[in-house]
Length: 87
Image (tube, rainbow, N blue to C red; front, side, top):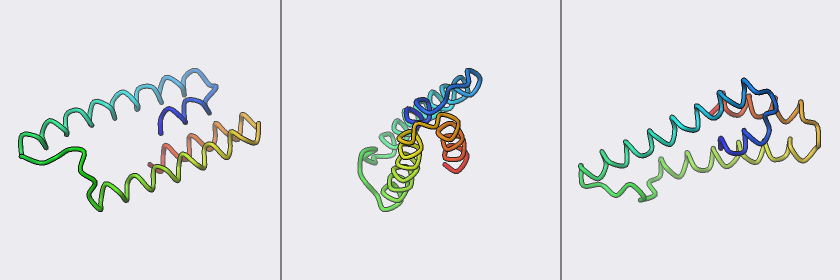
């Protein structure tokens, strides 16, 4: 999701913030995958909860891509901010 948000953002400070969120999210994924493996769980297994999160994220990405497709950079950036806040 953050990759799409970064494509929408033209403000330097906002891009930095999205990059930071992206890094932190990737770090959390790595840490929690390690915890799951130690507990004997399969990190890549699709649970109903994981599927719900995937669907929600996919919808937010679609909204940002729709905003990008209009060619209105201000609207695309605003859409990215709204989607990241709601994620």
